Length: 67
Image (spheres, rainbow, N blue to C red):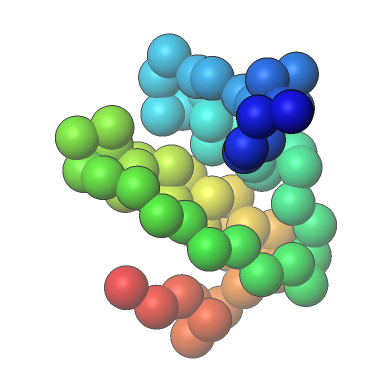
């Protein structure tokens, strides 16, 4: 048995917007999400999309967001 996450549980997204859409539907109000990645794969776009979606829904005020 190899180390790491099983292949069937891993997700690949060609665009940051696809990842943001998946995560937005996956996380729920009250969840804590740690985003770790590089600017080379445009992780900031994923974070910005999640912040916008959850702020619009009134789930975050911006005080919870730390850069």
